[in-house]
Length: 244
Length: 244
Image (cartoon, rainbow over all chains, first blue to last red; front, side, top):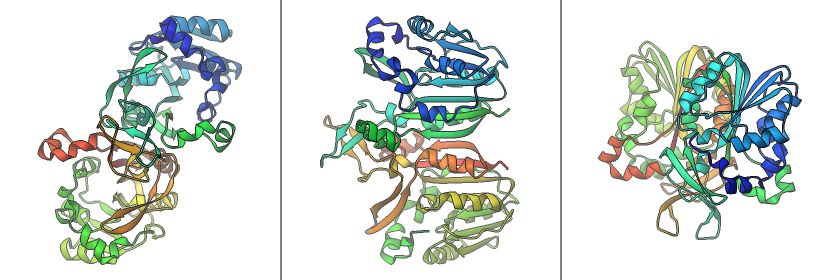
């Protein structure tokens, strides 16, 4: 990956304060929706691309996965994963998603949470994932929604009459974006939703479900600040199956 | 369809001034991209849902389609279609897409340009289209992009520093939208891109290609005002195939 920002100690300290870092999967509001897209994990071989702290790897292992391979490009992340989310069924390994070799015909599920938008060579990665999946295998992932990643100034704005708006611009201009996050400059890729879907189709996947995540009414009732997520989507969730 | 606005004489007169009305397919900047998604038309049976002036019906007939059925909910539109785009292979018929019965197993291609975003019961329409297509048949259509249809105030705005932005809001709130167009109040439906795609998958279609339309560099060079379309997409184009 082009980002190794997670190895920056200051950034890492900031990132550790996020609910999704500290509380694991339950700290990520989109997790229930992503989980709903997963196949049964019992007895399956699972690959987690950009595993971070290893929360999902542990979830898969505890759900009975036969073997879980968690890959991440940050050694610091992996050290923490081995510390807090170790399990006999899990192997954690340092790997750059841009180039990582994956064993052929070895997994029933490839999973990735909020990592693919750091990857520049997405088509090449999908080709490797397709090859690594067994016939009938699934790819389930989340990325930042392109509506979220497009603007040069990704922050809420006000219209003249005081309505809160998302100042969309440059949606059709794909490519690098840089944002400030926990005091660091983070580089990511803005990729159209259509580009993501066509890349999957081109790599031999069938699209099974596409979700522009929104909080449920219950989530908004429990945490009213989430209501703003109805104005624009932050996450895109996709489930695809190996077609050929 | 819920809109019969095209039968309003004043609206009709305004609509007639649009390049896509007067100049036909070549007046629609997204036509080359939509055309690129079409299968071969020679010898095929073609259905056009919301055919308007009949420009596409004529294109299909002249490309050698065996039979073309153009449906529209506006009698005024159909009268004009019969006048300017008559062809022995074409039948034009009055039909409301919300309810129109379609003959089973009768078409190789179902086509629709900028009509489905007026339809409320989209799942039901897709079920009827699926049934009307032959095995191996295709559905190719365009709709307004949900980024375009979402805002309550769909007009360019300026950020504090003078950048032009699209004031996105309410993207996740699906449902009716009303806009002013040629002096009339036009009712349409805001539907997420994911909802459109999942509806297709649920109806038994395989997604083949998804396109968030942008003008080509050549189009922008010929008509610089099109450059603004790079800030946000106006049209969504989809090609799908009957899967089962």
